[in-house]
Image 1 (cartoon, protein in one colour):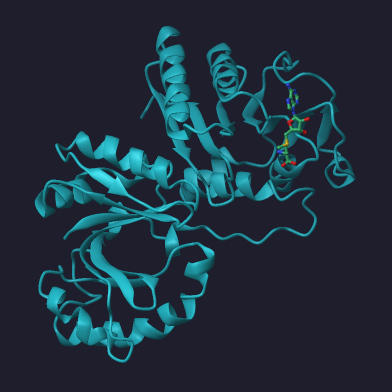
Image 2 (cartoon, rainbow, N blue to C red; image 1 turned 120 degrees about the vertical axis):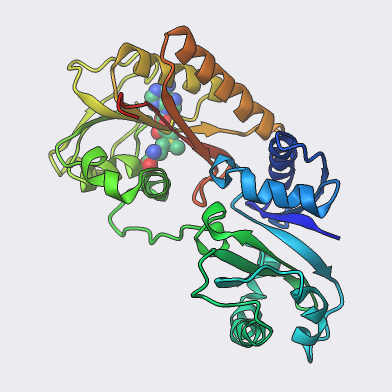
Length: 358
Ligand SMILES: C[S@@+](CC[C@H](N)C(=O)[O-])C[C@H]1O[C@@H](n2cnc3c(N)ncnc32)[C@H](O)[C@@H]1O
């Protein structure tokens, strides 16, 4: 039976399931999801394969917050023969579209990690087999990614996704190396957000050296570090202590103030970033206030989600943002939201007014 297989952070299966269930309904695909807690993946079932294919082709992958990767699985094999796994897969290959890329992956969980060797070992023979049966040609025009997802050494899901409508990253994860000098592990969240949300060709302008930034909830300085290393000048707002590494650069001024009442003296701030551990709706309103007052051009912030109903809480915050901006007559804005790989119980948001020419 076909389903859409979705990857997510282990522990967020219910949020990922609610997300695809809600968004698929916009394409007349009404379904249900199945997922075990802490596995890092879920199955979404619709009324038939055609409706699921419509979803995988038409629902923009970039809309997902909790889903890291997805593909349309045409078959679920539960008893693969470990001595000849390829033979077991033969029955479904005819139904596959011609692939231009092959991903053999496993969940981002402890069980999944134990399967990574099998994934590596299986990729080449599977690709060779698919070439032989004319289901694989990297030079073909239509880009289709074929996916084989092992959930154990004898079970897998097998299918495809349009390459331009799924994550180009292995397992949907942007892995980054923690910089030795950075004051906290949080630093990778902002680095990942900049890389994921800002297209490469726009980085030179939007992350230019010399820009001014405000970092609310800055201590000990992991996010400030990312701004400073890009040559920006930072107003770091937090009652805590800032690490010397960032203070010694001479690019940072530390204000021991409350982030909710802080007002920049000069109105030359490009970036507002915020990682305060505060109620998400309060943070969402604060970010809108800054944008509406014209105190910053772009905001990058975390919404902390310690509650059970995380999908619903994020939606409430996004509604607050949309309503506040509409009420202020800001009709064109960009709102990107994602649970990044380096995020934990939180999501990261990019919010900015759309430039006039867009
Ligand atoms: C998760 S930490 C920030 C880590 C930081 N982004 C980094 O990379 O090092 C949250 C910070 O928010 C600060 N904070 C919480 N509420 C605040 C408020 N109302 N005003 C200013 N800072 C606040 C805390 O003092 C804490 O240092």
